[in-house]
Length: 209
Image 1: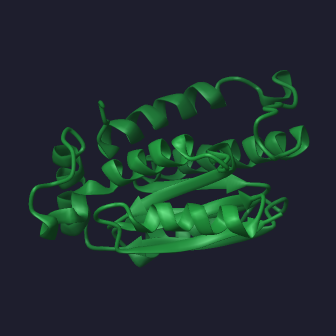
Image 2 (image 1 turned 60 degrees about the vertical axis):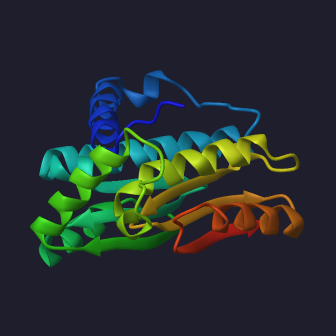
């Protein structure tokens, strides 16, 4: 299995964001992905909201595109990542909340000093190239690995529609949102994530539909 470090992944994310912003959304029309339990309208709105937020990030401070994760499901926005000041935290959250179409914001954005963020990204760059770090005490850099394990395990699990979930791991705490078709599916998803090596805690915003 080839994994990509968060630094490279977010750099590519920034590039794809620019490509997305360069294409007028109105020209694309509503998107439909039948495998997801979202209507075409929900998918379209989520795409518009996310591109709008990332567009504001790019105008205000390009580091937000690297340090902040924005995941959206049915107009619910989950914000994770780390910034190096309270000022940036309030700036990011203000930009996120500008869109009146957003129903709920799950705020999990952390404030850390610049040295901590630099060390965090350095560790991720190193561990992203390998599997789990040999020393379990140095799990900080294993978020990319944890996220890849969640994707693989949910995709392989019968009775779980992995396309209906969005997740991020920050400092080995997993934040996950989406829709479960039953309480059994919800329990199965949370159990799978909690069993992954290195996961400290799981914060769930999963609804049962």
